[in-house]
Figure 1 (cartoon, one colour):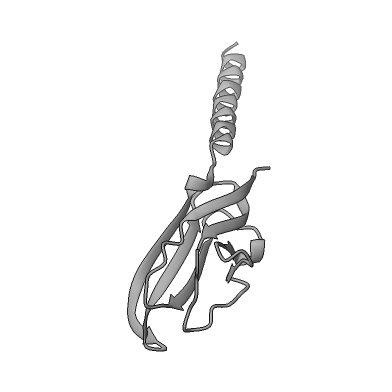
Figure 2: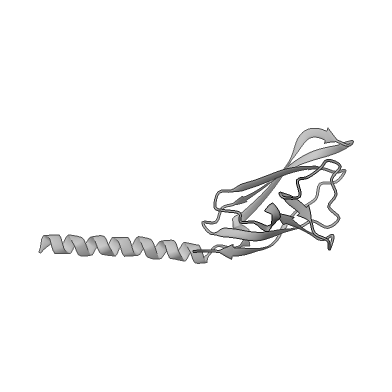
Length: 128
């Protein structure tokens, strides 16, 4: 009888952990991507250089990440597979639209007379 009760208790505990995990997956949003920018102290093309890092703190993968980047230009080359201004001149695509997995940090540097805000605009959340 005691073994049966222990088995039932173990199953309830497992169910509780699984249920909580699924609730966390449904709550992932664009705000789980964190953008930080810091001045590197270097200059490129006569402009200050900035380091940008976008980290996915959501357990779910986020794809097709877009940043607001109106008028983005850099006096140093930025790898277009990491960050590429879109043709509209208002948005930029991160990581070539490819998945940004949990814990990933996508990094790039740019140099400009002005610091761009590079705020998050959109992404697609893919939970499995």
